[in-house]
Structures are given as structure tokens and as C-alpha cells.
Image (cartoon, rainbow, N blue to C red; front, top):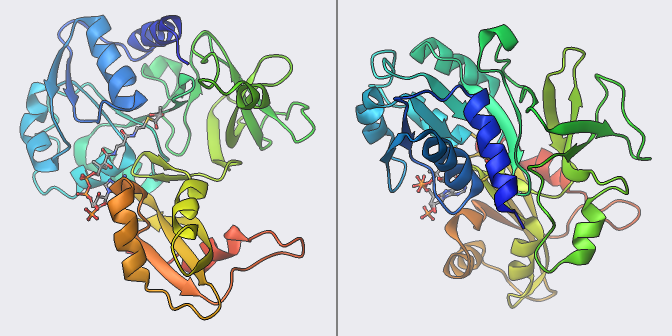
Length: 333
Ligand code: MCA
């Protein structure tokens, strides 16, 4: 439950922090059924009274053509990877641009560096969640510091951000722990889920993001991983338990595990390991086809492996880290 107050406070902070000016034009290419395209991008332009060039879907060649009419662009890392693959993308296409912003998934340092070389622009990476709208941002003005690749910058004005250890104590700077946040932007709870809401807040009212990270001595926040079992594919969240549930219901399936592995275009994609019931023969392609008919395409695993069993630890828990390790090179290059 996000209130108007949550969204307005965030939109005002971002308008100021990202230096929106009269005459800015937003090239809008993101889906508007998610916070990034709907709130972060649109609200910025609307609050600023700015024109938007509206794309129904992201088309890198068309973006390169329209960029010279725009000054602000926001995208998930996959969009930047695809722009760099366009031969016509470079300084000339970016001549009127003021700011490129990335978020929703980790931006690889290689993409950050290559983009700077090709376009002359340093991508500003920021961090947020649907539950909180935006939380941190690399600086816009040089006087506030450099835009540091691999980090998500500083907590935004009015946002509290702390790093907690497993016992609920606070980590000293540089140490890794769970990221917790507070501020006028933080949501009021999960709709009709009071228990889940209570679980995700600390006793003193901080929201546990589920992201794991650290704050450097000079204040930059870096996200190093997630404590929740979640795959971020091309900026979309994929919850393994949901997909495993669909697979496990299929005839002949005993159990399954979905893990995220690196992917050059989507950053990360889901790969499923599936175990058949005794005597059953499973066809991975048929399972994929069934899934495709039932769930959104981005949730469908990019590969399926039928295996004899899943790796487990002494407690019987599936060791997803071993599956990730085993399949991490599947889409290399
Ligand atoms: C499409 N496919 C995907 C994805 N998108 N698979 C995995 N992950 C994806 N993200 C499937 C397609 O259905 C297709 O399957 C195959 O992959 C190739 O599709 P392609 O033509 O390459 O896809 P596309 O239509 O060009 O879409 C790619 C995209 C899109 C433009 C990167 O995924 C996208 O718009 N992502 C942005 C998501 C976003 O806005 N997230 C913000 C969440 P097949 O071949 O079987 O048909 S808000 C958020 O995270 C917080 C608040 C924040 O901080 O911003």
C-alpha cells in the first residue's frame, strides 16, 4: 500500500536531486505496470511539467533516432546493454541528453564503463523497491561526489538507511548486513497481509528490504546480494517458489528448483532442475511449453534440466548455491 504521500514525497525529492529543469524532455520506454516506468519516470516528468516521448515498447533502433529530441532517459540495465549493441549509438545521438539513469537490477561495471566511452555520459545508478519507491542515488551534481559504478550512491534526502547484522545490531561502515530503511516514501504494508507486513518491519519501525549490502566510509551504498530467494531478470522480479509450484503440479514431477544464473542480455535468468517421480519420463521441452501457456513469458525458465536428484545439505535443504555454481556458465558470452 503506497499512499499519495509516499509517492509525492519521493517525486519531489527526485525532481530536486536529479536536477529536473524547464525544457527537459523524457524519452519514456519502460512498461507502466511497474514502479520504475509508472512512478519514477512519469512522475518526474509530470511534476516538472515536462514533455514525454512515449514508446509503447523498448526498441533500441527507434530510441537512437529519437534521443536527439530528449534530455532524460531511464532504463533497466538490459536496455543499456541493448543500446550499446546498436551501431548508430554514440555521442552524436546523445548530443541533447542531460541524464541517463539506471535501476531495478544491478548495472554491470562493464556496461557502466562502455557506456561512458561510447556516449560521453556517466550513467547515474540508483536503488529502490516497489515498497519504498526510490531509496538511494548516485549524485547528479559533481559537487556532491562522483557517480561511482558498482554502487547505488547515497541515501536520498529524508531517507534513513542502515545496515543490520543477524542479531539486529548495526554494522559499522564497510561491513555487510541486511539493508533497512525508513522515511516518508516507505509503504504502509502489504495489502491484506498483516502478518507478512509485521514480519518485514523491525520493532522500531524500519523496513527490512531483503537486500544485503554495505555503506562505505564515504557514504556510498553497495548492494552485494539478497537474503530473499528472488531472481531479477531484465528488471522483472521472478519468485522461484511460484514457478516451482507450477512445475511441481505437473504430472510425473516429484520436485523442482529454480535458480538464477548470469545472462548477457537480461543480467540474470531462471534455470530449472526437475526430478521425475519414480517410473515417470519427463520431457523438458514439453514442461516449458506448458509453463509458457500458463505464466508470463519473462517468468518461464530459459532452460530446464531433468535430473536424478537435487543437491541437499545434511538438513535436507536444497542447496541452490550448488545449482547456481553448476549452471553459471550456461549463457556465457
Ligand atoms: C522478455 N522476456 C524475458 C524478459 N522480457 N525473459 C526474461 N526476463 C525478461 N525481463 C522473454 C520474452 O517473453 C521472449 O520470450 C524472450 O524473453 C525474448 O524477449 P525479447 O523480445 O528480448 O523481450 P522484450 O519484449 O524486448 O523485453 C525485454 C525488456 C523487458 C524490454 C528488457 O523485459 C522490460 O521492459 N523490462 C523492464 C522491466 C521493468 O520495468 N522493471 C521495473 C520494475 P519468447 O521468446 O518465449 O517469446 S520496478 C523495480 O524494479 C523497482 C521499483 C526499481 O527500483 O525500479
